[in-house]
Length: 253
Image (cartoon, rainbow, N blue to C red; front, side, top):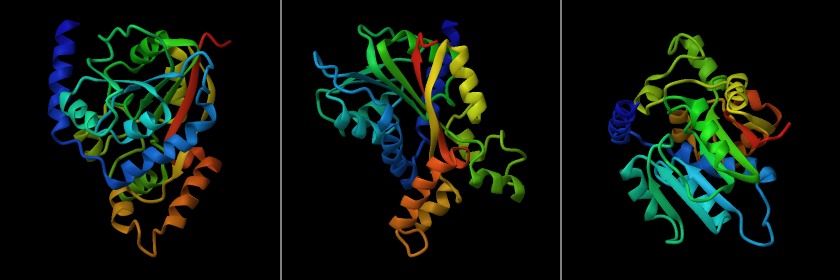
């Protein structure tokens, strides 16, 4: 098992050099915060809520989380990602370099964010179960993954770009994805980890691929109003969104 973790660290270092988030990916972080906001824990009164981000990449979501939470910890196994993110957030944000499977936090958290990360890990149920152990009483785990059923992927199948919706695209492989999630498979892994869903949904109805949205963003074709319309439509049709999410709690019947 120790050798497996060594190999995983090497794998992450290799992937990091090719990992580039598109402008659309960065915009998605703001949409995700808006979608998850109804389930985020309020101030406890005796102290500010403690939040944990598992996997930071280049820090786009970390910037949003640092604005929402005065007490934020970030754990990631890739030093390049950590260095890049440190420069973008206040010094009060704590950082730890570790694989999730090896990390042992000194405290529990009211909110844990596992965003566009679960598709990368070796054993998603193990990672979810460890995150569940790190939740404080009444704490919530926010799991967001790319949606295998997004219209842009359905179009790619009809075009012959990928053989089926579960297949990994060239970009998926380049970014180190190990699996494609759908709402039923995401909920299955959450349950298998001993967690119970208290909320679920989709973020941003996605008719175009990332590179198409990037090329057209800000034009008369893909205006700000168009993007906002796609966000609102994602609430109505979560199964056709760019990303899907589950909000879960530990020990809920």
